[in-house]
Image (cartoon, rainbow, N blue to C red; front, side, top):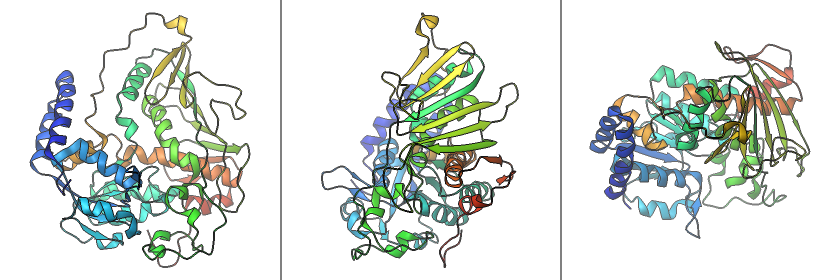
Length: 449
């Protein structure tokens, strides 16, 4: 594997994508494919990680590189690698010998050989990196849930508009075929008007080994840069790598990790944006500490009416196998799911399948003729838009309000209050003083957005 990925991957992806393009008559896709093949996009990956000892992934950045190169082939050139822990990137640096390496993302921003950045660091540093990149005129692919707080997300949305950068949030399931078919079924009115949605995932926090505060950071780790704008805490092995998700200073728990993937389907199918009312409760916390997230949680999201569509009440659950915090309601083969409840019936969906309920009411049902073009890859869509001046399906204008919604659930949980929210201004319309510190967290000295 070299800085310009093997062409056979590109040709293989192109052949598969062309079949979908021909089926849908998508000439724009064909022209875009030619554009990125002729002129590769020069990308720096921030938060790269690398292959693990067993050959598996050792960081979401490395997974992104593999996915992006498989989708785009010669349409992408990895010109830069950045990670605060040099020990984790030894193998991947060998794979891209022509790419520069740095442990400090700020050294990338003035480089003319970098057109775009892929941000796969922990959530608490997403915004400062993405904001710096957009101000430098670079296109941005950022992992979900875009940022650590609501203010950061809204700033990222504004910067993308101001600097005309091509953006994409890493909700790759949005590009899977199953979601597209579900959206078509919902929009065809198959189950009628919908005002109730329930979403659930079984995921639980995985905190790793706790209580190791005071250990010395390894010499390969730039711990100050890893902390970034987060408050200073003594180095603790249980804070780093994947388990950072389960500490409030660095992540947002299962809700921030998974809700963008699943609530995305409801936002897309029902044309939802930001909620007007949010509240949250939990069953209990399995682990102790002032910084640890809840293991089971329920979030109530209320959306306003949209033109002819009624208001929608969406409930999120995590840590359970169905839409009930006490585990009393389950659906076979849908341990994770999205349930749309309509006036004519219900639709149950997950990443790779869907089902209409009750089954006897929909005997002989034929899905509508596909109208949403097949995807040629979530990363490739971003690369093509950079080359053609187009847009992406999960640009920050769409994905920002989705991520904002998810993080509002954590604000409601941490304050214990019902939030009444004005999406136009990003402000609460009711009095919840404690919420301000979570809507816009204070940065550690020396860091700004």
